[in-house]
Amino acid sequence: MALRQNQRKVSQLEVFQTFRDGYRENDALRIEGLQSLLAIRKKKARLQERDRQRVEQRYGKNSEQLKRVESKQNGNIGFISGLKMELNRAGTRPEKVAAEDWVVKGRVYDRLGEPLANAKVVLYGMDGTKVPKVSATTTDSNGNYRLLFKGRKKDVVEVASDQELYRLLGGMWIKGSEKDGMGERIRTNINIRRKAGVFVRASFGKRKPISADSIPMVARPGVSHYRDLILNFDQYEGLKPTDDNPIHTTRFLGNSATRELHDLENEKQGCRIGMMRFDHRIYFKTIESAQDAGYDFCAYCFGRDKSKR
Image (cartoon, rainbow, N blue to C red; front, side, top):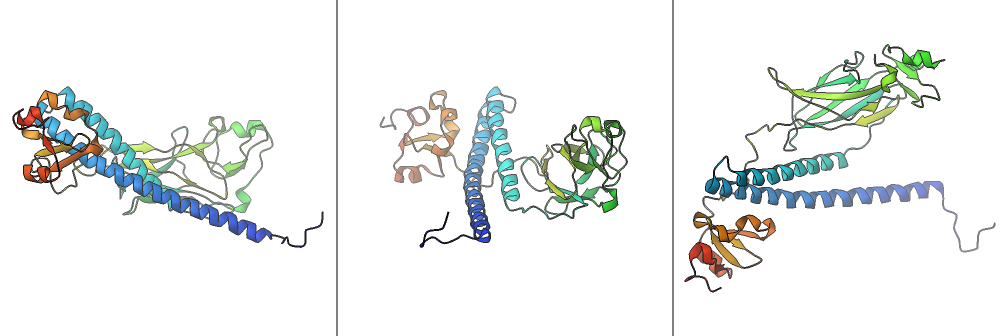
Protein backbone atom coordinates (compact mmCIF):
# COMPACT_ATOMS: atom_id res chain seq x y z
CA MET A 1 0.00 0.00 0.00
CA ALA A 2 1.48 3.31 -1.09
CA LEU A 3 2.22 6.00 1.46
CA ARG A 4 0.06 9.09 1.44
CA GLN A 5 1.62 12.30 0.17
CA ASN A 6 1.96 13.91 3.63
CA GLN A 7 3.20 10.79 5.39
CA ARG A 8 6.88 10.32 6.09
CA LYS A 9 8.59 6.97 6.28
CA VAL A 10 10.09 6.48 9.73
CA SER A 11 13.49 4.88 9.78
CA GLN A 12 14.42 2.05 12.08
CA LEU A 13 17.04 4.27 13.70
CA GLU A 14 14.38 6.83 14.67
CA VAL A 15 12.24 4.09 16.22
CA PHE A 16 15.16 2.83 18.30
CA GLN A 17 15.99 6.41 19.34
CA THR A 18 12.40 7.03 20.47
CA PHE A 19 12.35 3.84 22.53
CA ARG A 20 15.73 4.61 24.07
CA ASP A 21 14.72 8.15 25.04
CA GLY A 22 11.51 6.78 26.57
CA TYR A 23 13.40 4.25 28.65
CA ARG A 24 15.81 6.91 29.89
CA GLU A 25 12.94 9.22 30.84
CA ASN A 26 11.23 6.40 32.75
CA ASP A 27 14.49 5.60 34.55
CA ALA A 28 14.89 9.24 35.58
CA LEU A 29 11.32 9.39 36.90
CA ARG A 30 11.82 6.14 38.81
CA ILE A 31 15.02 7.43 40.43
CA GLU A 32 13.26 10.66 41.40
CA GLY A 33 10.40 8.70 42.98
CA LEU A 34 12.79 6.44 44.89
CA GLN A 35 14.69 9.45 46.24
CA SER A 36 11.47 11.07 47.47
CA LEU A 37 10.30 7.88 49.15
CA LEU A 38 13.71 7.38 50.76
CA ALA A 39 13.59 10.90 52.25
CA ILE A 40 10.15 10.17 53.74
CA ARG A 41 11.26 6.85 55.21
CA LYS A 42 14.40 8.40 56.72
CA LYS A 43 12.26 11.01 58.45
CA LYS A 44 10.03 8.24 59.74
CA ALA A 45 13.12 6.42 61.06
CA ARG A 46 14.13 9.48 63.08
CA LEU A 47 10.65 9.75 64.54
CA GLN A 48 10.58 6.03 65.32
CA GLU A 49 13.89 6.30 67.16
CA ARG A 50 12.50 9.11 69.28
CA ASP A 51 9.44 7.03 70.03
CA ARG A 52 11.61 4.05 70.94
CA GLN A 53 13.57 6.16 73.41
CA ARG A 54 10.33 7.47 74.90
CA VAL A 55 8.85 4.00 75.37
CA GLU A 56 12.10 2.63 76.78
CA GLN A 57 12.30 5.51 79.24
CA ARG A 58 8.76 4.91 80.44
CA TYR A 59 8.32 1.12 80.34
CA GLY A 60 11.89 -0.23 80.54
CA LYS A 61 14.22 -2.15 78.21
CA ASN A 62 12.49 -5.53 78.54
CA SER A 63 8.90 -4.34 78.18
CA GLU A 64 6.43 -5.68 75.61
CA GLN A 65 5.64 -2.12 74.56
CA LEU A 66 9.28 -1.58 73.59
CA LYS A 67 9.39 -4.86 71.63
CA ARG A 68 6.39 -3.80 69.54
CA VAL A 69 7.96 -0.42 68.81
CA GLU A 70 11.30 -2.01 67.86
CA SER A 71 9.53 -4.49 65.58
CA LYS A 72 8.00 -1.63 63.59
CA GLN A 73 11.33 0.19 63.61
CA ASN A 74 13.13 -2.85 62.19
CA GLY A 75 10.55 -3.13 59.43
CA ASN A 76 11.21 0.45 58.37
CA ILE A 77 14.98 -0.11 58.54
CA GLY A 78 14.61 -3.01 56.11
CA PHE A 79 12.48 -0.86 53.80
CA ILE A 80 15.14 1.89 53.80
CA SER A 81 17.83 -0.68 53.08
CA GLY A 82 15.88 -1.93 50.06
CA LEU A 83 15.33 1.61 48.78
CA LYS A 84 19.06 2.37 48.93
CA MET A 85 19.81 -0.79 47.00
CA GLU A 86 17.19 0.03 44.36
CA LEU A 87 18.66 3.51 43.90
CA ASN A 88 22.13 2.06 43.39
CA ARG A 89 20.80 -0.50 40.92
CA ALA A 90 18.82 2.14 39.03
CA GLY A 91 22.04 3.92 38.09
CA THR A 92 23.85 0.73 37.00
CA ARG A 93 23.99 -0.11 33.31
CA PRO A 94 24.37 -3.70 32.04
CA GLU A 95 27.98 -4.57 31.31
CA LYS A 96 28.95 -5.64 27.81
CA VAL A 97 30.59 -9.05 28.01
CA ALA A 98 32.66 -10.92 25.45
CA ALA A 99 30.88 -13.81 23.75
CA GLU A 100 32.97 -16.40 25.63
CA ASP A 101 32.95 -14.72 29.07
CA TRP A 102 30.48 -14.45 31.95
CA VAL A 103 30.32 -11.76 34.65
CA VAL A 104 28.41 -11.34 37.89
CA LYS A 105 28.67 -8.10 39.82
CA GLY A 106 26.79 -6.14 42.46
CA ARG A 107 27.13 -4.68 45.93
CA VAL A 108 27.28 -5.96 49.50
CA TYR A 109 25.37 -4.05 52.17
CA ASP A 110 24.88 -4.20 55.91
CA ARG A 111 21.43 -4.36 57.53
CA LEU A 112 20.97 -0.60 57.27
CA GLY A 113 21.66 -0.52 53.55
CA GLU A 114 25.17 0.92 53.93
CA PRO A 115 27.81 -0.39 51.48
CA LEU A 116 30.21 -2.83 53.12
CA ALA A 117 33.91 -2.71 52.23
CA ASN A 118 36.37 -5.64 52.45
CA ALA A 119 33.68 -8.33 52.36
CA LYS A 120 34.81 -11.60 50.76
CA VAL A 121 32.80 -12.70 47.72
CA VAL A 122 32.98 -16.26 46.32
CA LEU A 123 31.09 -18.09 43.56
CA TYR A 124 29.53 -21.43 44.54
CA GLY A 125 27.64 -24.18 42.79
CA MET A 126 24.25 -25.39 44.02
CA ASP A 127 25.95 -28.36 45.69
CA GLY A 128 27.94 -26.00 47.91
CA THR A 129 31.22 -26.43 46.03
CA LYS A 130 33.35 -23.43 45.10
CA VAL A 131 33.67 -22.81 41.36
CA PRO A 132 37.41 -23.31 40.76
CA LYS A 133 37.69 -21.32 37.53
CA VAL A 134 36.36 -18.08 39.13
CA SER A 135 38.66 -16.42 41.65
CA ALA A 136 37.26 -14.97 44.89
CA THR A 137 37.34 -11.21 45.40
CA THR A 138 36.69 -8.55 48.06
CA THR A 139 34.41 -5.53 47.91
CA ASP A 140 35.81 -2.03 47.42
CA SER A 141 35.10 1.03 49.57
CA ASN A 142 31.64 1.37 47.97
CA GLY A 143 30.71 -2.27 48.53
CA ASN A 144 31.13 -3.20 44.84
CA TYR A 145 32.36 -6.58 43.65
CA ARG A 146 32.87 -8.24 40.25
CA LEU A 147 33.49 -11.90 39.44
CA LEU A 148 34.64 -12.91 35.95
CA PHE A 149 34.77 -16.26 34.17
CA LYS A 150 37.19 -15.90 31.25
CA GLY A 151 36.21 -18.40 28.58
CA ARG A 152 37.62 -19.43 25.22
CA LYS A 153 35.86 -20.11 21.94
CA LYS A 154 37.04 -23.71 21.83
CA ASP A 155 35.56 -24.27 25.30
CA VAL A 156 32.04 -23.98 23.87
CA VAL A 157 30.96 -27.56 23.20
CA GLU A 158 27.73 -29.34 22.41
CA VAL A 159 26.69 -32.35 24.45
CA ALA A 160 25.55 -35.35 22.44
CA SER A 161 23.43 -37.09 25.06
CA ASP A 162 21.57 -36.54 28.31
CA GLN A 163 23.96 -38.93 30.00
CA GLU A 164 26.76 -36.50 29.29
CA LEU A 165 24.72 -33.75 30.92
CA TYR A 166 24.41 -35.66 34.17
CA ARG A 167 28.09 -36.04 34.86
CA LEU A 168 30.04 -33.65 37.07
CA LEU A 169 31.25 -30.69 35.05
CA GLY A 170 34.85 -29.76 34.50
CA GLY A 171 35.07 -26.00 34.34
CA MET A 172 34.21 -24.77 30.84
CA TRP A 173 31.17 -24.02 28.70
CA ILE A 174 28.67 -26.75 27.99
CA LYS A 175 25.60 -26.74 25.72
CA GLY A 176 22.50 -28.47 27.05
CA SER A 177 20.08 -30.57 25.04
CA GLU A 178 16.70 -29.33 23.80
CA LYS A 179 15.05 -31.46 26.47
CA ASP A 180 17.01 -29.75 29.21
CA GLY A 181 16.28 -26.34 27.70
CA MET A 182 19.18 -24.59 29.39
CA GLY A 183 21.20 -23.53 26.35
CA GLU A 184 24.92 -22.92 26.57
CA ARG A 185 26.25 -22.53 30.09
CA ILE A 186 29.45 -22.64 32.06
CA ARG A 187 30.81 -25.92 33.39
CA THR A 188 31.18 -25.31 37.11
CA ASN A 189 31.89 -28.72 38.68
CA ILE A 190 28.18 -28.92 39.49
CA ASN A 191 25.87 -31.81 38.76
CA ILE A 192 23.56 -30.81 35.89
CA ARG A 193 20.70 -32.56 37.68
CA ARG A 194 20.77 -29.53 39.98
CA LYS A 195 20.07 -27.24 36.98
CA ALA A 196 23.72 -26.07 36.73
CA GLY A 197 22.95 -23.12 38.99
CA VAL A 198 25.51 -20.95 40.72
CA PHE A 199 25.21 -18.36 43.47
CA VAL A 200 27.36 -15.71 45.09
CA ARG A 201 28.23 -15.90 48.79
CA ALA A 202 29.46 -12.83 50.66
CA SER A 203 31.04 -13.06 54.11
CA PHE A 204 32.50 -10.58 56.57
CA GLY A 205 34.60 -11.15 59.68
CA LYS A 206 37.39 -13.57 60.56
CA ARG A 207 36.56 -15.42 63.79
CA LYS A 208 32.79 -15.74 63.37
CA PRO A 209 32.07 -14.52 59.82
CA ILE A 210 28.57 -13.44 58.87
CA SER A 211 27.52 -14.60 55.41
CA ALA A 212 24.66 -14.27 52.92
CA ASP A 213 23.85 -16.03 49.63
CA SER A 214 22.46 -14.48 46.48
CA ILE A 215 19.55 -15.69 44.38
CA PRO A 216 20.76 -18.58 42.14
CA MET A 217 21.50 -17.95 38.47
CA VAL A 218 22.57 -19.92 35.41
CA ALA A 219 25.93 -18.80 34.02
CA ARG A 220 25.73 -18.37 30.25
CA PRO A 221 28.45 -17.10 27.89
CA GLY A 222 28.17 -13.46 26.88
CA VAL A 223 25.82 -12.66 29.79
CA SER A 224 26.26 -10.27 32.73
CA HIS A 225 24.34 -10.87 35.99
CA TYR A 226 23.75 -8.43 38.84
CA ARG A 227 23.30 -9.60 42.44
CA ASP A 228 23.14 -7.56 45.65
CA LEU A 229 23.61 -9.13 49.08
CA ILE A 230 22.69 -7.98 52.60
CA LEU A 231 24.62 -9.13 55.66
CA ASN A 232 22.34 -9.08 58.70
CA PHE A 233 24.38 -6.89 61.04
CA ASP A 234 25.12 -3.19 61.61
CA GLN A 235 28.54 -1.73 60.91
CA TYR A 236 27.74 0.79 63.59
CA GLU A 237 26.00 0.47 66.94
CA GLY A 238 22.43 0.31 65.72
CA LEU A 239 20.37 2.99 64.02
CA LYS A 240 21.26 6.24 65.75
CA PRO A 241 19.01 9.29 65.39
CA THR A 242 20.44 11.86 62.98
CA ASP A 243 18.37 14.66 64.50
CA ASP A 244 20.28 17.33 66.42
CA ASN A 245 17.65 17.33 69.18
CA PRO A 246 17.22 13.96 70.89
CA ILE A 247 14.15 13.21 72.95
CA HIS A 248 15.74 14.39 76.21
CA THR A 249 16.04 17.97 74.90
CA THR A 250 12.73 17.97 73.02
CA ARG A 251 10.46 17.27 75.96
CA PHE A 252 7.19 18.39 74.40
CA LEU A 253 5.38 16.51 71.64
CA GLY A 254 2.56 18.02 69.61
CA ASN A 255 -0.13 16.21 67.63
CA SER A 256 -0.66 18.20 64.43
CA ALA A 257 -4.00 16.48 63.84
CA THR A 258 -5.58 17.42 67.18
CA ARG A 259 -3.33 20.43 68.00
CA GLU A 260 -2.66 18.91 71.43
CA LEU A 261 0.65 19.28 73.26
CA HIS A 262 2.00 16.43 75.41
CA ASP A 263 4.66 16.46 78.14
CA LEU A 264 6.85 13.38 77.60
CA GLU A 265 8.14 13.54 81.17
CA ASN A 266 4.60 13.37 82.55
CA GLU A 267 2.99 11.00 80.04
CA LYS A 268 -0.25 9.31 81.12
CA GLN A 269 -2.08 6.29 79.75
CA GLY A 270 -4.87 8.50 78.43
CA CYS A 271 -2.45 10.41 76.22
CA ARG A 272 -2.29 7.44 73.82
CA ILE A 273 0.92 8.71 72.26
CA GLY A 274 1.63 5.25 70.90
CA MET A 275 -1.47 5.54 68.68
CA MET A 276 -0.31 8.85 67.18
CA ARG A 277 0.76 8.74 63.53
CA PHE A 278 4.41 9.58 62.94
CA ASP A 279 3.64 12.20 60.35
CA HIS A 280 1.49 14.01 62.96
CA ARG A 281 4.28 14.25 65.56
CA ILE A 282 5.82 17.68 66.05
CA TYR A 283 8.51 18.15 68.71
CA PHE A 284 9.02 21.37 70.66
CA LYS A 285 11.81 22.45 73.02
CA THR A 286 9.62 24.81 75.04
CA ILE A 287 5.94 25.28 75.89
CA GLU A 288 6.08 28.81 74.53
CA SER A 289 7.13 27.66 71.05
CA ALA A 290 4.22 25.21 71.00
CA GLN A 291 1.75 27.89 72.11
CA ASP A 292 3.02 30.23 69.41
CA ALA A 293 2.27 27.44 66.91
CA GLY A 294 -1.34 27.23 68.19
CA TYR A 295 -1.17 24.09 70.33
CA ASP A 296 -3.38 23.48 73.37
CA PHE A 297 -2.39 21.48 76.48
CA CYS A 298 -3.29 17.81 76.87
CA ALA A 299 -5.62 17.39 79.85
CA TYR A 300 -3.83 14.20 80.97
CA CYS A 301 -0.26 15.56 80.83
CA PHE A 302 -0.82 19.11 82.07
CA GLY A 303 -4.09 18.78 83.99
CA ARG A 304 -7.61 19.91 83.21
CA ASP A 305 -7.02 23.37 84.63
CA LYS A 306 -4.55 24.18 81.83
CA SER A 307 -6.38 22.45 79.00
CA LYS A 308 -9.12 24.35 77.16
CA ARG A 309 -10.65 21.13 75.87
